[in-house]
Image (cartoon, rainbow, N blue to C red; front, side, top):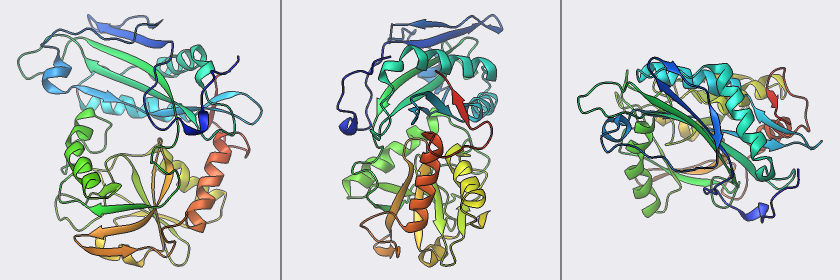
Length: 341
């Protein structure tokens, strides 16, 4: 299929409506048959549960045009499973994992012309989401739900692409112990909006959130997991029950160990030890991995040896290897690449 005519290398990370999206409804205790539709609008009653009590979850993944001109998605089975986990936590009926994969396939195939060409640096972002759709005035789960998937072509998540970021240690908490920090619920992101707006107003790219119980341990940012590199080239990533289990982070740790031969460690990371690391990155679906050049802790600057000019060497290798796998330039582990067309 011929690609849409766009300035693919400069489209930025913004919503651009594509032609088709997938919709399935849950009613009377079961999911109905899903359909593709051209209608991008949603009509809800003013008392819909999602509007009153934020009963909504979502996922994020990407489709790529590979070197040999196929369109693929990266590990969508893990997104399907994570969405099931999120649904259970918010008392929502899980959307079946096999149907999730089929919905992704249908929507991407229907919007194949919007999948950016190989080598452009852009991708097709895929957003599956679900919400309580019927009227609820008492505090309780909805009885009816809608599952949808839309797509939009996007460029790099952070302006400037791989230019190292400056982030601050936030005074706000992202998630509470035994809360919802480990699921992809919309309410988690709503809580981060004021923090990110204020960070941008002060000249920072992102926030470093600490654990809310002791405020001594590194957790994550508003939309990405941390990954650190030690002086002896070990990969360290924070472990916590309030951190979202990033599929990109999991993949990068595998790449580090099995492709690059590096030692990896997932453990509690204390703020006081951050100055000892030589590289830092933020990893997630949208950005893959973005380098951090500086962390500012209430006026105290923590500068990484990798500097503010470019990615550090280890993070660069991780980025190049994982994106090489995603684009079909490097052989992928079994089951990582889901071919769509």
